[in-house]
Amino acid sequence: MKKFRPDGEVTRGLTPLHYACFINNVSAAKLLLTKGAKVDAVDEVGCSALHLCAEHGYYRMIKLLLQYTPVVQQYETPIMEKNGKYPSRENIDEPLRLAIKNGHYECAKLLLENGASPNAIYFDGPEITHVSPLDTNFIELLLEYGADPNVFDRKGLTPIMKACRLKENGIEAIRILHKYGGDVNAQADFRQDMRTPMHYALLSGSAELVKFLISLGAKVNMPKGYDKPSIIDIAVLKDDPELLKIVIDAGADVNAVHTYIGSALHLAACSILEHQYEILRLLLEAGADPNIQHQFPDGSQLKSPFVEYFRSRDVVDSRVVHLLLAYGGKVVMRSPINDTRGQLRNVLRLAATRDQPQVLTSMLELGEEFDVGAIDRLPLPVALKGDILERAKNPASLQQICRLNLRSRIAPFRPDVVSGLPIPAHMKDYVLGRSH
Image 1 (cartoon, rainbow, N blue to C red):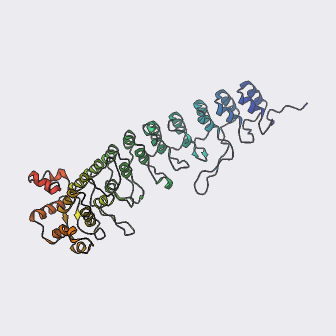
Image 2: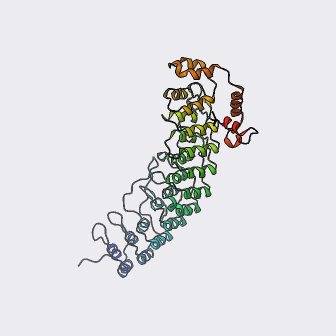
Image 3: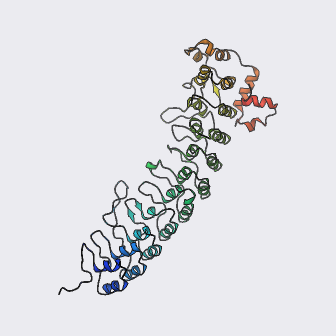
């Protein structure tokens, strides 16, 4: 009769101890172990008895197995690829991963207490990146035993960034991660446009989450050299005045330029937004410059937001035009090629369509720096450009000169500042461009 071997292979690398653990037979497992069964014996796919117990949540069995091994070993230690990406594993996940995956908290804690690595690497990222932000108990457990809260998953996101995608539901996870050193200002990799948790919080649309991140020290401005949509850009594109006000109140730079699109005011002026007027008003009140000029490293220049507003649509909103004028928008009657604030082409288009005479009148009344030569050269009928030429060739009235002078000298130029001037009320409206 063949002698019984407690660590002998039954099939495919499985040992009697595997079978005892699979059916949770503590007595049989204890007998096998006292007779010399190897705790760390693995089958063909790298599965040990400890893997089986962790997967099924057999706490007593795990305690028994740990009596026969000094620490929980890491069954596989993948080597990072040269490009910094996480490698594939040859065998089954670590016992800790199986315990967490199947919701066995006490088993996971027992494994960690006995040396299981909280930072084991998998194809999609380190251990903590596999845990849902909703599983806050497991997140805190891993952090208590040394998990790195600032690791990136394969997609280039940190645990805090992933939590931000869950709106208010991610706040508790963020609170825990921050408590253990989680960086609320970390930047994702280039595949994610180098975004921060604040980007993802804004994209989620949760005002509560945005306020919470700010309370933890999240920044609302991006460093110079950042060439992707900034935090305030995302706030504008979300078309939510409440979110925009939160980041503005937190100190967002309304005149920062990070992309070829321009400042937040450029973005708001050129986008199709349901709450465009309110968003523009918030930006202008916060100091956004409707005449901002910016030159890129390649020498190209941005046209002003006021110019771009007209260029972005066929029919303009008269409320928006008067809002921009009230905050100092200049109507420079030159080609935008010669002056980034040049409104000549936009005004001529208004004159040609004749669809919005009130807007045309408002623009012409605040026209300045007329380029007579450019107007003369335009291939348009004299009747069409007659009024523009007449304004260009004749001296402005003293009243007009005073108005333009005030608009240029008052800084910042805005309705509340003008309302404090010691002039009659109707003249204040005149200076702001509200009367004809």
